[in-house]
Every structure is written in structure tokens, then in C-alpha cells.
Amino acid sequence: MRSAWLRPGILLACLLWLSACADRPSESWTLAQGGLYAGAISAAGDRVAVGTIFHGGSLWQIPEYERLFDWNLDADRNLDDYSAFTAIAFAGNGSRVATVQGRQVVIWSADQGRADMFYEAPAMIRSVALNQDGSRFVLGLEEGTAAVFSTETGDVIQRLIGHRGGIHSVALAPDGRHVLTGGDDRRVIYWAVDEGLIRAHRRHDNQVRTVALSDSGVYAFSAAQGSDGEVWNTANGNVVRIIPAAQRVISVARFTDNDSLLIVGDRRHGVSQWHLQTLQRRGHWRLASPGLYARESNVILDVRPLPQGGVLALSSSGKLALLQ
Image 1 (cartoon, rainbow, N blue to C red):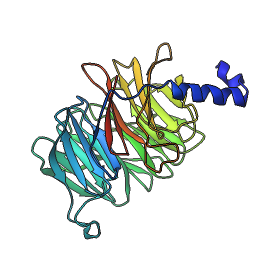
Image 2 (image 1 turned 120 degrees about the horizontal axis):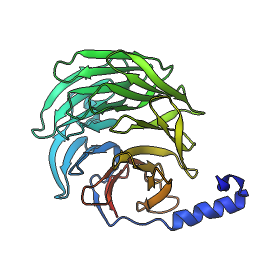
Image 3 (image 1 turned 30 degrees about the horizontal axis):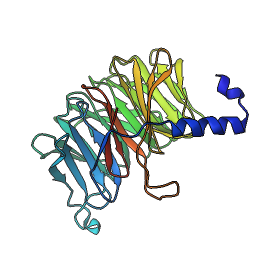
Image 4 (image 1 turned 90 degrees about the horizontal axis):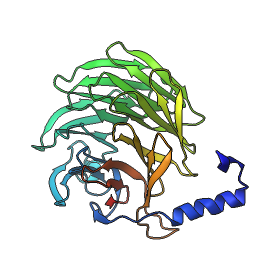
């Protein structure tokens, strides 16, 4: 906490020094020339699903760098038959992918490329997540409701009502029985799905746009706009670690290595890996940028650790990077 006492000039110099010392990607691939609305990387790091700005949705095989399927809906002819997917999520085992466009969500087979389920929500969908085997998914809606569905039947398992504003980030436990939601009302809520009950919650000082849930369900992560991230215990809501944002907006987070590591990405093409027990930063990278004043978007949309080591990071610029 010593940095809290630094004078502004010294603090700025420290931040610039940290930025200059960031590592560059070992390798990168361009998945879309015009950028992405949304994207997700499978847990195994072998597939990437993207919603491009100009050419709709697609699923890619990595590291072969092969486009397997093109995914588009016929509902919006104003986009020349290309869909604008604004949220995308993988099932934990990589078998299914969820895509969101407006009030519509489609569950796709990642192996066959077919649409397994289609649902139209009563309000705009802001976020989506699938559980480990893809049997359940959760939607975060603009009007403040989160809804958990069965992928097999399309039935609503539970409606979770507790937010007063759009739910812009959701996370679903591997077994689909707990949900983490973050919204415009500055609240983060940890839910028990089957009972529809709030198990824990926290309040931030700004809109919450990023949440993550550890596979064990013991820890949750949440970050408000313009604030540091918080790692907290889902049993009681107590904060156990603060993840410095260094004046950046955290856009994505992933727990890994049996909850001992946390990988975060921000809205200025930065990725960091933190050891949670010691709160030491184990890695810091910056994806390539065309220049300080370039208008190209560089939001980190997803991050995933690789079994063989390193991290994959997907940027809204349309680039997928290998970080080592």
C-alpha cells in the first residue's frame, strides 16, 4: 500500500515505467481486419469464437489458425446477412458456444457448427455464460434480471431478481448451481440458482462491468469502472485481495492454477498475471498498438492459460496473441 503515499508526479513516472517494461506477445494472429464486438477463448485454448464488426461470427481452430464455421442469423438484413454478436461464451468443456445479438441468444455446437437452441429474451441481453458441460446458461439482461436456462429443454430454471440496472457481466459455476452477476447499480451478487437466493454480495463505487468466479466457487472477482479489482470470499463477501488496476479499466479476469493465480486484461491492450497468495505480479504484457493516438480498439476480450505454459489473449482489434 506504500504507493498510495506517492506524489502524483512520482506515481505517473512509476506507471509509465511499468508500461515500458511490459513484455510483447511471442506470436499473434489476425482473426478479423476490422475488429471485434465480442470474443471468447475455449478453456483448453484450442478454439476461439469471435463476433466481428464487418463479417459476423466465426469459430476458429488454434494453433492451426483455421476457420471452422461461420455463424450468422437471418434476422437482421440491415447488416448484409452478417450478425453483430455483442457477447460470446464457451462451455467449460468447449462443446458449446453461446452468441448474443440484441435480445437473441443462440447455443451452437462447437463440433458440428449447428444451432442447438434459440431464445429471444424480453429485454436486451448484456452478458452470457455457460457452465462446464453446456447444460445450463445464464443471461444478464438490461432491465436488471438474470435468468438461468436449461440448454436441453430451453426452460427457465430460475429468474434472479436483485439488481436495479443492466447486468453487464455474469459468471456461472461449473455445475451451474451458482451465478455471479455485476451490474450498473454498482452491486455484485453471488446467487444460489436452485433456491434463487442471494448468498453474498458486495457494493462498488461505480458500475460493475467485470466479474469472474473460481472453479472451486470459493472466490469471486469483481471490478468497477476506474477502480482496482477485488478478490473476495463467496461465503461471507469479505475481500481477501486487491488487484491494482494502475489507472486502467479491467475488462476480463480468469482464475487459474487451482485458484492460486488470476489473469486480468484491461481496456488498453494490457494483460497481467497475479499470484494471489503473495500478490506478486508474475507477468505483464502489452499487445501491439499502432500508435499512441490510434483509434483502433484494444480492449482485452478474453484471456486463457495454456496447458503447455503461456497465456492466450484476445483483443477487440481482432488479434489473438500468445503471451509467454
